[in-house]
Amino acid sequence: MDFSLNKDQILLQETIKNFVEKEVKPKAKNWDEKEEVPLDVIKKLGDMGIMGMSVSHDYDGSGLDMISTALVIEELAKGDGSLALTIAAHSGLACGHISRFGSEEQKKKYLPDIASGKKLGGWALTEPGSGSDASALKTKAVKNGNDWILNGTKMFITNATVGETFTVLASTEPEKKQKGITAFILEKGDKGFKAGKKLEKMGMRSSDTGELILEDVKIPDTRRLGNINEGFINTLMMLDKGRIGIGALSLGLAEGALEESLKYVNQRETFGKLLKEHQAIDFMLADMKVEIEAAKLLIMRAASLADAGKPYTLEASIAKLYASEMAMRVCTKAIQIHGGYGYTREFPVERMLRDAKLCEIGEGTSEIQRLVISREMLK
Image 1: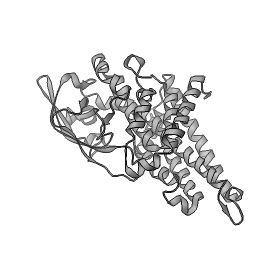
Image 2: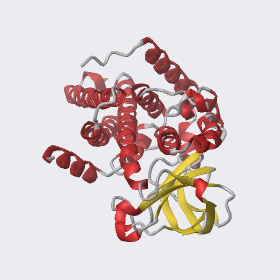
Image 3: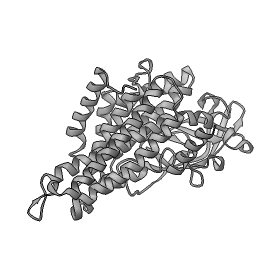
Image 4: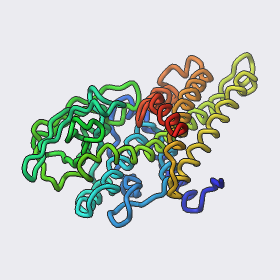
């Protein structure tokens, strides 16, 4: 397979790289310390068309292919994992679900604002007692004439307190478990729908994560997203692309950690010579590079299959699993190379390691990826 980038993809990659150098890297440490979502930078990305990567031009999106989307997330993550996560969740999940399964009326009503970045979107499946186990989902939607009444609590939702348009998954026939889940569109301002507490996290601290509370939220059937009881089935189709995105995010964090390590070994001296002149350090750098390149190929393979319209569930899970665990190994080595300084907040590798841990958990844990991979193999 030829993974050479075309001219448009190369231009996009360079554009985001330059943006990150100017607008992200100098500010990421401050955002992390303040746990502050950089809404001004997100607006600039919206003006560049990045917030609507998964949305067609018909609804003010940029309609990027999967390879291009992965490149954007990768470059953003080199500067700040939190920003990359915010964009990935907004564009891939919030925009993606409506774009793929919404009615024409829903697309026209909701997509232009969230695809342009005028509004931030969120996607809510996980609950306090259900994450990987969607069959334990407790949020319920009950039909009442031409309306639905929703009650429940969602947890670990990206953009929970700053988002304005949300896709929410609720149980419509609990006895059917995963096959009885339906998606709905909720908006900030709906009576009974509000953000709960904002979570204090180990990493991804400038990406907003919180709780959503639904108390007798009454919405018309026109806000139902997709067919009744097909919400989770549709979700599984969404998650394949999302896993490529998290793989790309993991890759960007690892590449950022390697770049910082290369700068450091060219400056730091021990035992009368630069760190780069120590073979033990050189071997660590070599191992980091090999793992990064392997992850890059896995991600490109999955993205290429997605763009070609071929099945890629197996390849997406392989890419996500390997890239996320690779990012932890590479970021750990980066801290080791930095020594005591790597354990301080003075250098960004400390933040990168904290951010990388989320990649082994979000969009399906490593354990879930191994289940998916083994099931695909045994079909």
